[in-house]
Image (cartoon, rainbow, N blue to C red; front, side, top):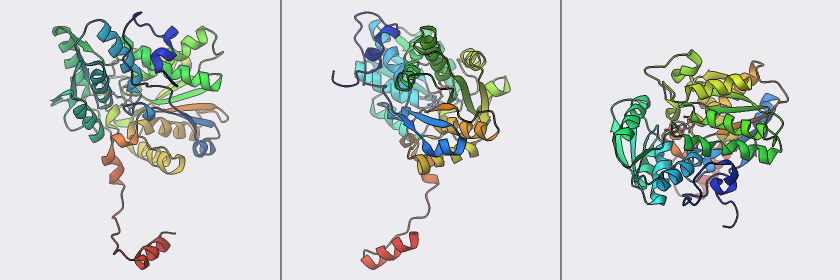
Length: 353
Ligand code: F0G
């Protein structure tokens, strides 16, 4: 390999997979830790973005999927199965294709962003749409995986997924030479906050870093079971990736919050969309709506004083904006159609400024 070898090889000593297993990788990980001056100015903190949309399928799910599919293939499984709000299915489909395995995905009808569905289709996954929400899909996937020979469940209830995803925390510490003071991220099924916390704790336990960050998790207000303290039967938010009412890693999220001295709070769809636009126009980073929940939470906690000024803060932006073109296009103004004359074009340009 030249350059970045993918996260299994980069962190071989910290990920438990079988010796001699064929590594299934698309060279995921090694994503940018991007300074965000516009956010630093607004918050009085030093803010960096962990840009997970730069992964091969456009989301952080690839970190977990390389490890889960590598382990499943080594164990002789033939079908990768998952429930998904979109990104997990896109990632599972790509890694299964790479591994020469089958993939089947259970998705909630009508609530998957177009780009994600396109990925699952083009990678050749079997797409089973259920007339229910993500929580229903996960329940069915868990049962089907137990009942069916050769099927491996690659949702984050699979411990290999968490093993892979914890490497994002390693990368951040490796770049900074320390852990941040605060880490903000969106929370849906709660696997990722669980994984980051595990990664940070491992580095601190082994004295690679001297402290762990406070974990700040943010759910969408219409899908905020961890904030309410009970499952939500009909979760709803524009951030379809985190439209989840009963997170599988509930305990992991609460532990990350409490052990780190952090918080889990809700942000409204309006706050999410405002952060989504701000990231695009003032930071130059196009994310999907769920990813903007971390930045919405950053802005809210900076404004009300819960985020101390001067903190070193990392926000994970979990998925690429291209995943969800419909949300982006909703903000598009009526296009101006011009005749093909230089007079019309210069006149229009002058009007813009
Ligand atoms: N951001 C994005 C873009 C996601 O796709 C997800 C989860 C999350 C945040 C939340 O992460 O579940 O670990 O708390 N998407 C899953 C999926 C549920 O099926 O793609 P989490």
